[in-house]
Length: 211
Image 1 (cartoon, helix red, strand yellow):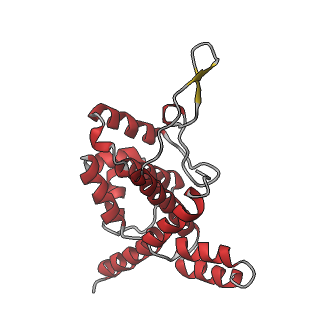
Image 2 (cartoon, rainbow, N blue to C red):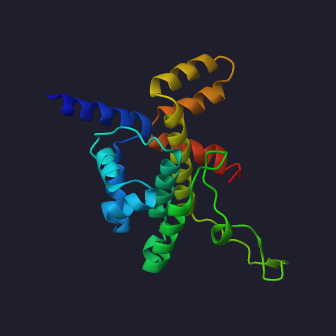
Image 3 (cartoon, rainbow, N blue to C red):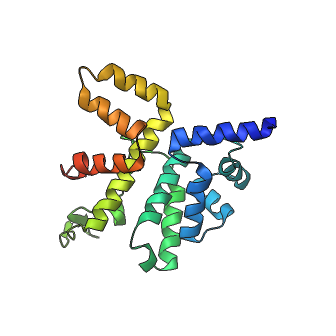
């Protein structure tokens, strides 16, 4: 195996450790789902097309800019929306433009939506008074699954951005004796399967009404 091939194998393994799967697989799903070109997605993420290509081919391992990772998660959230096929092409284009303008994660490490995307019960009208709105629709089972999947991915991405699987496992072992629930959360989101993380997020966050 040549040095270049060895680098690709090592980088792909690191991507699986940090992001749950090779970035090439994650990105190709988005290209297919959103009918985007590789250069078009690179523009949304704030990367050059060659840089995105290098990440997809595992010539590079890590997304070093947190804002780029934030935008990638936002695009994945859009692609996972079950209502995407019902949206006009112009609306999808506008949403991608909004994502492109997003510059950094929130302080909690999770994306929050504002303005037209917020789900609050009131909004400001032209006079500055709070205008009443209809109560939000009761979430469906599919909505709950989508929210659990998206939320779990955010937490997984955050942990895998700041620590390796070995470091997360070591931290969980230190905490297990006194803080077993925290140790479990570290293991589930840091080194566990995506399905386990989604189930944990639905059980602890969504069921408690925290989001």
